[in-house]
Length: 406
Image 1: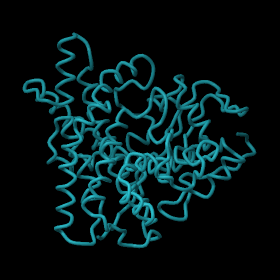
Image 2 (image 1 turned 30 degrees about the vertical axis):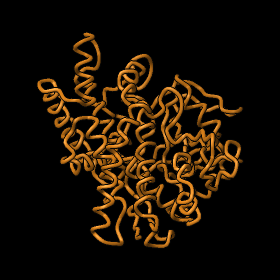
Image 3 (image 1 turned 90 degrees about the vertical axis):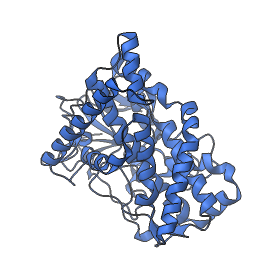
């Protein structure tokens, strides 16, 4: 990374909605720490090699940008949500012992064992949604029919929030992840409204607790005399609801599109359902549409990456999709091996800040794939893969529509 390096503009273009940017391979070979310009006009550094991305994400010295630091903004000053600004008011600690305390308290509810217990209910919900999609006739858009309603139903049940509010949750989530779909004022108002809603919900749980995550955290705090404050509870609920349905909902559509884009993949899964687990992780690894900006880290001191010094004060964008297609880490990285194991992809990050809900996301994706293979074995894309379009205006990656028929 030097002053002579060319400056690339994010997001990098790609030929198709499921294709990786053509620059990734060249960057990994020749410029693994690239200077990039953001829609805001600010600059940062983009990492594309697996080893570099994993090293930075695993380094406990660095965290996501914090309020008041000089980190690069993704969105222009006229727009951008909480996830794209550097003035986030979420009270969850970003690093250190306070962050680990938060992860310990919340993370115990997202273990693989707990997700296994939720699986039968997820399966029933997915079956009901697929039946309704079939009854409505073909072709159908898999996103509103299954991709969004399943994750939002699951996370609402976990939090004890009414699933009937899913449209409001979806709007608030989009505003949090906004790049240029909404104005800065609209995003700010969504934050106010979402916070007010969750504050009221937490107050209700205090007087009438249920069998849900929020109620349990409240009761544990009472019993132990310590725990999450009301502000932390509110922001935890918001963060989990946004992450718990937005990213998984988009991944459902992308996974099915990837598997249907080459019919031999779908046929292989029909012939061998034992591949569902590894096929889900391979879809996560091969996803070239993870988001245009990856995970952000703000350097508070110089960082050495294989002989390249990235100076303190740099906002680094960890290209998860690029890292997951690094041939140094994965044989046949640009293809899909549905039986790939082990598969140490970085779709959920790495280290102390890896995604808390990854067991939940994996379980939902596995359930979706199992139900669709069983109930709709003739499922196929209703349009050529070249006609699929990327979701625009949000920091998360996704497809605008996933038209299917059977």
